[in-house]
Image (cartoon, rainbow, N blue to C red):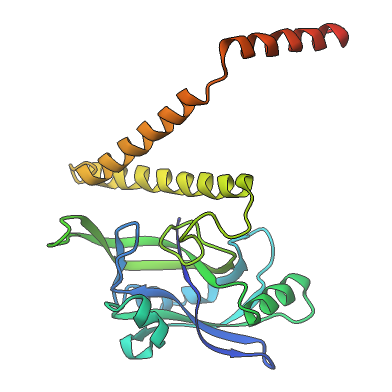
Length: 257
């Protein structure tokens, strides 16, 4: 299972019917994971009846019931994309649109729907599985791009912010008003997602007899070196560690351990 997160591209919001229509996937745009979906990549699975199993959730929480009822999921061409999508991704060739109706009288559904109206929930994310793809090398950047040919959709979710650095809510970290601990949690989650993605990319490249590009390996090495320096510089001094050890022993004696 993989996840993609994008800024929230609303096409229509109807307060009376509690329905929202928006774009949650954009074709032709190379994302920060070097993936690019193409027109028709979702259509096959959406047309085979699997759409009936797609759920609209809050933050991919599959343990709770959905927060909204999916009324339609369909691919649209470039002419069906809002202007703000084309401004965000001028190379877009199309996208995938979802219309959902938020439940009424359900606390979480009401909460999320109100947050959307106020502009405080601004991103969506979707969970999917890739059944077919092709690797192409960009002529300019020389980077490998995974072109998604056949995608199976599992759920679409409203989210506070995506952990993908390319999404709107993560640019310019730390998030305004976030404490250092909150910022640390965001970074930790981002790194965990990045490491998982690197492992996944390493695995399917090995199946093709290839390895990670020098650019990706260089980025990983730079991150590792910088983190190692911070760990060395913040390592507790020996005398401090000794004091802490003596204090722990004192507490153990006092507690009868």
